[in-house]
Image 1 (cartoon, rainbow, N blue to C red):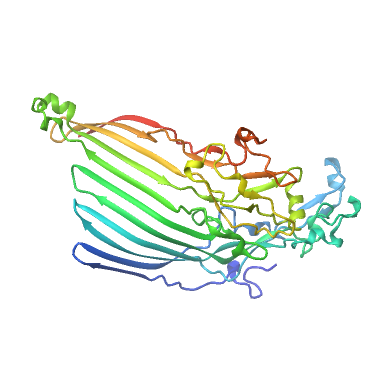
Image 2: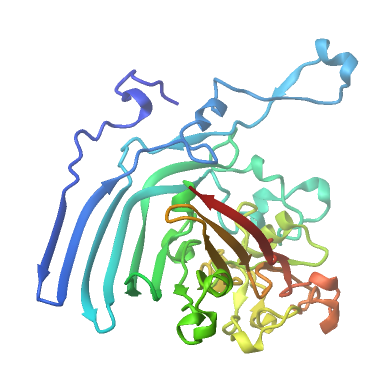
Length: 457
């Protein structure tokens, strides 16, 4: 334990990194109807108090806060009872104080095509360094629950399998402290994407816009935009945690359109009058469509009749580290093979065997439900004078009322023989309607229709 600004400890508990240089560079070259563009830059983020409280967690460190336990007493005896100091919770922040840094760069070609259309093809990349990593502190080692010296004599003859072990706080590496976290700046993320856009913007008539992205966002867990750090592993953080991060969307397609419907009176002369214009002129149809794959996630598991802490002690020998489910095949089904009760291939999962270190499968290897939404609008313009007019609007969000699933049951419960038992009841399991692998929540995006009138003067 140290104090800020004393005995060589820097003020603020972390080193001052000094002036940071953030250069930018950009280049554009015109080849007639073709333009080449490229650029890059260095960007920094401040070390902030995250959602879970990285830099504010020091308020729980001793001697600021100490928790005591009262044994064998009641409310009436509190004033005269003696207390026992409980193990202290400790949070540490690495003193090197590296600033989270992002290197952004891109290169692309824009080409003018016929019909007043522009094509844009670009490579976009990003490398993030010195991101915050939540590393384990004072975790009990792997296999320590099986050692003779860590067995509880009050539970009868020791079994050395994790079921007769002492409470973990009695044999941690640093006695008197709980398992905690130390936040370092030792992780990184990267993003690489092919981005294609086609746009036609040319006044009245038909305006079109299409954008497609094929990308990968990889790193050590966490949520960069939410300020949540990556989660470390006691022995091999990169092997345990490196994979698609929660903002990864490998394929995203969006397109929009605006169509000014031609006046019917131009083709039918009998309608080319005041009444015909009132009914058939001034119509406009527009829409926006979003199609995207879902976010990556992990599948957790348990064994019937065994609580999570006991499972950890039995499989990894460490009460603090849970085993990860084993993947025996690709669990992601094709769109045509998915159903409400079987969104993933549940036969691809198996429990970890004894001796696991929690790296039994890669991170975020399962893909959640995507988005497939169509929004459309129909406008009618009614002119009163040259400057005054009204606009009638009929707008529909999720016009086809396509169900937007948000998640599926991602917890597998095995029996003692390694069989999944909490499958949906429709496929013979005991998990009920929303058993393992079944879609179980929507994004709350039903069809919404609104009618409006807007006046311009």
